Amino acid sequence: MRTLVLALVVAVAAPVAGAQVVATPSGATLTLDDAITLARRNNPVFLAQTNARKTADAAVRSARGSLLPSADASFSGRYQQAGQQVFSGQSFSNSSATLQSGYSVGLNYRVNRSTFLTPKAAAASRDAVEADIVGSSEALRASVTQQYLTVLQAEARAALQDTLVKTAQAQLDLATAKVEVGAGTSLDVRRAEVALGQTQVALLRERNNAEVEKLRLYQQLGVVQPESVKLVTDFPIVPPSFTLDQVMSDARRQNPAIVALRARDRASALNVDVAKSAYTPTLNLSTGVGGNSYQYTNSEFLVNQAQAGILGQQSACFQQDTIRTRVGLTTNNCAQAYQFTPAMADAIRQQNRQFPFSFQRSPLALTASLSLPLFDNFSREERVQRAQVDRDDAIYNVKAKDLALTADVTQAFRTLTTSIQTVRLQEQNASKAREELAYAEERYKVGASTFLDVVTSRGTYEQALIDRVNAVYDYHKAFAALENAVGHPLR
Image (tube, rainbow, N blue to C red; front, side, top):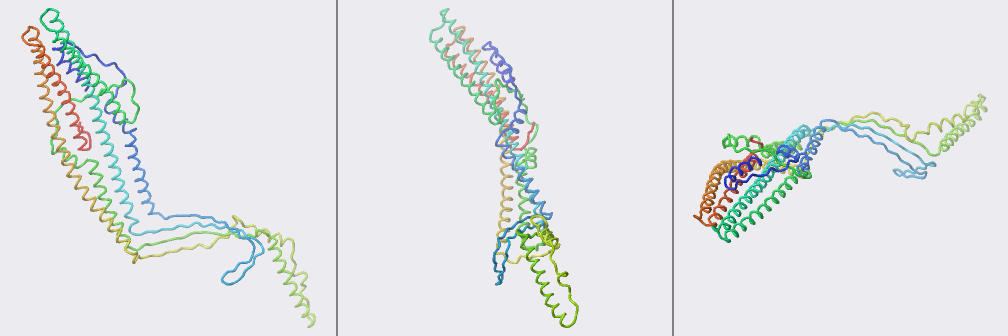
């Protein structure tokens, strides 16, 4: 578009000033599509908004996971010193410290009506988040497009000022030539010099403004501006091929903002059902396996205990033998029957070595329960009321957005149609101002008018060209604003 505007400026100004616009040195190029792509990849604000997708996906995954049973595993260990303990009024003593460990693996399944409704509500909320991201992407596209056009407009105004500087220089040369032949005055030269200085100052300002606007463009893109970058996208001026009713229908159907609000409306309606599901019964199923190990830190405590038990049995056996021999019966051979051997001691020591992983498995258990909530201090009623208020708010938001969308699209469409008419009128004004300036210069050359008339005509001509450039870019910005209101590109 910049090239097109420069060519038009040359076509208008050349018959008067006889100047040509010097082409900008070639360098890095940037199209509008490239700018939008860079912005969507690097703009930090937009990237931060896209992170909401991860949270929404996690919420959907979590909601769907409630359809599956939960599982947990645990492992525990315990050390207890030797000593006396009191349990249920009874005193127990232990002469050895103990080590205990245990494990458990359990499955639990909980299901009620909300188990099946929550995934649907989470999916609807995710749809709303996706629509928000699309809306942010379209808003970023519109913002980048507007700034891209602003840069092109600033460059076109700078190119125009460069042409006007050459026009002012030509008028200064004309005034000087007339003074040299005695047909002019030094006042004409001074006026021409002032006019040239003013256009030079305006040129500096416009060039600086173009660089500043380009810097702001790259700020939106989220990347560092390269050297000597050139914007090359062309924006033709063509009347819109669509009607207001068409774009209005398109906006109500596809605008990401209203699509997101409708998704939230669906999600809020499902959340009401989820809140009401607190009144329904809940089924809980659980099962699991586990085991424990128990070990004395001093294995000799068990050995001594077992040996004492054998000796006690042997003593009782000897007492019985005494009685048996008195009545003439044979003995029980107690010395051989009740012996505590080293092998028995080793077996006791080996059996005591259980900590931490020699578990004694617990029997399998299955538990099922059905609970029906009766009263929870009106907490359910509060949750249901909050959900219903959120649903009503979502409905109102959809209605408000629909009204705002109607106003925004209508305003943008009318601004667009007005802008294209303004471009035509400004083109006519620029052409007439050029003719007026040429006529004033010819009259000044032959002495039929003063240099003040030339300065006045030149001011009119300059303003007409500036207005024409502004009208052209106001049209393109109005088109971009309409695309933003609709929610997607229209060309």
